[in-house]
Image 1: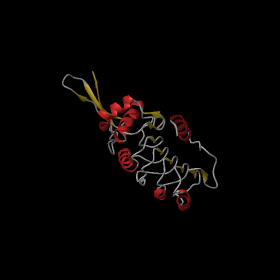
Image 2: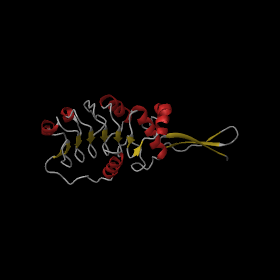
Image 3: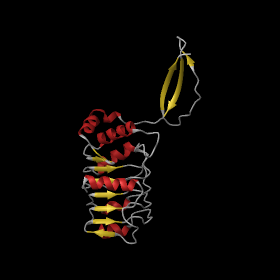
Image 4: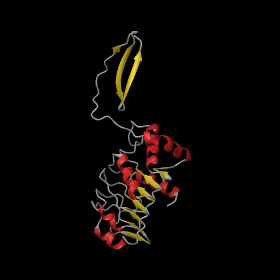
Length: 228
């Protein structure tokens, strides 16, 4: 898959458009297998039995998958499409040494660091990754509270963990991003306070008579100084 075709595919899936009509039987073309829009909650055993030894590309998008246990027989995979499923933080992939493309758009993944550590261990050849539509990916198209700065910090952190990536989400990895990830990527992890309650703004007076109001904005503690 080239960069241009990969970008088109990711944008299409992010918009919720299945790349192919609903299939009644698996679609197989040479080494590519598609089993999309089947409402399956687990990978059917017959897919691995019939195609696991030969498949290099597997598309399981637009299903109801919560587990990837059935992937163990697909040891030669190079591309894996898992968009629009119900995969969460307990996602576990078998070791796939040849996998270079993985898309997990529109799932239920919220913990970024544990996912990246897992991917670094089991898919060492990964070059193309997309996580759009997950809470773990702070994209402003999904969450209005996020902005481009939040997304860029996310990119630095991902590139710090997965150093071989060439393409992340819908954008090619730049040389500058690699350099920034090397220097600052480890510090780009966003830690959100748990159970933060919105307290009323109670001004406190400083020695010079200024008022100080403490508030939380987007989970960040801020102080506003104003003269009274």
